[in-house]
Length: 158
Figure (cartoon, helix red, strand yellow):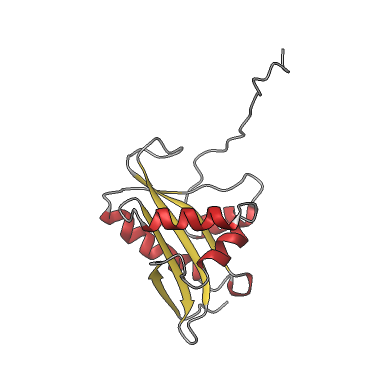
């Protein structure tokens, strides 16, 4: 499919067109006020968080976004610290497979290098095959698979 002509820019306000709507589509179990609170905290700490919006060049319509953070704790599958971690990427379904996610990766890479990082990391749910394919298409290498467990400590398990 043909790549779209895009404009990529940093999100500078919680009112950035498309940002909240795309977050709500990606993380639909999170209440709106929590999204807005997180967005504001990201904007307040630009040395730790970066977020970029992709818009169509022809009409300025938002078509996707990416959020990244600087992680200094251990990140599974990496060898260095700090690591830039892609916290989320979302492309409007009508604009997928047109190079939007790849275009969004470029400013994240530049931001990561400016933060002194030598690795970029990400994760995806074990059953999110579309995300796995996207990561592979963008030259990420799979490092491990993990299944998380929990045991409630309310006395029910013995």
